[in-house]
Length: 208
Image (cartoon, rainbow, N blue to C red; front, side, top):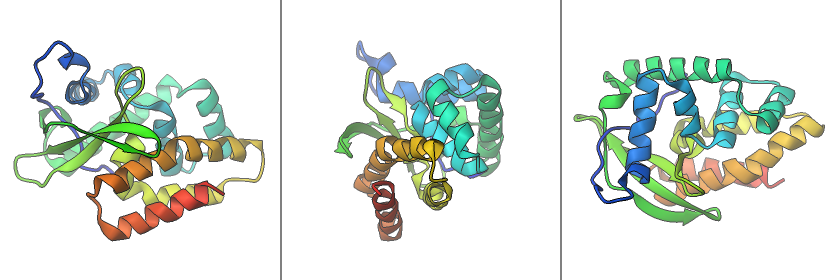
């Protein structure tokens, strides 16, 4: 499983809305993963992006992905993903996910969505961005956050989709969820020109 350097504890905002601000949302998500509260971890992320990451990472059949897009991620599937994610992060970073540091968020608009971008780091490593997207509440977007390492699997999965109703359902999620997330990752400017070229090619492919 690919694990990017992502998230964290700490929040520089102690105002009345601090608990719902992006840094606190990210910190609560990290703590939920650490404590194996997988329902809370899933509730903290934008579900369509979560599903597409699951699908592209595991090569799920389009019918299974389409069903999750319509009915949600089964709890057992989510628990398996977050368990592997937690173990992979610990191995990759050398720290539990709940011990990292997050910086102040910066809002950008990309792909028709408002995003808050937060730098996250360990004490010794360069920071990497975590993306949350605005809506009724801030939610972590896994496609945007993991974009640098997932752009190739995302493209391969899109290309593999069948020309049927299930494939069309998943392609719609690429248009509605994946493309805006990739625009955000490009706009943030953390991943360089090679990533931007791949991301733009995927955005164009998703547009048909």
